[in-house]
Image (cartoon, rainbow, N blue to C red):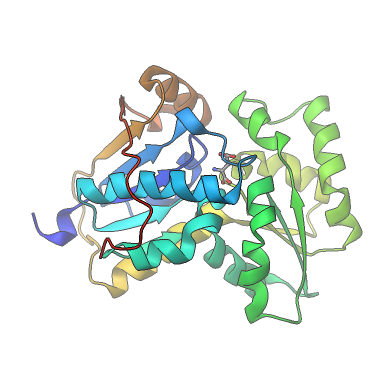
Length: 276
Ligand code: DGL
């Protein structure tokens, strides 16, 4: 198998990365994808950065060992914890969700006030602050929205309870008068309706899922690794948790898109930077 025929590995803490996979399939329809969700240890959002880093490298090592032509870190918490290490560790192109979303927001903002909503772990890592170092004139307002993940996984994307929580979380974003908001968590594209409803149409929402897919397209095009002709593409789903649960929740979130899932056990591996 030549490099170009290998699948693209997509890693997430659980189900939410399926929003990134959906964008990838839309933008790269002729590619094979192998998706790994670490559902047994999700959510990553409340965990320490060191723990997220260890888990994410185990997942990425697993995908890399299976043979992939590129790795996509679909999870914002994982991207925030391992970005620099991952680039050094693997010999294939790596894309992630933080930097492409930050670049899009820099291009989109008109008043120089940008917000980012994310998990606690992503906010604690200050990864978006680092990404915005390229644009020192922009004021960034980060806000953790931990309960959003619960709502999405329960299939709730509207209603009074969610509205109350969204109004509370988004209050500091409104007060900061941002005109651009990054949805810095895999689950939030599924709450775009509610977030847009609370903030109004004057705020541009940047989906880190969409910008990640665009960045993957660009990197693979530059590396000469994209299929341009129509072909029968495959999607493989791996989970560290229960395969039937994965399929059930995956289908509830993203419809028939999720097919059979297989349970895998991740190697604790070694946490060194010698994989090249
Ligand atoms: N995938 C995570 C992220 O994008 C959200 C879910 C979790 O906390 O594991 O940060």
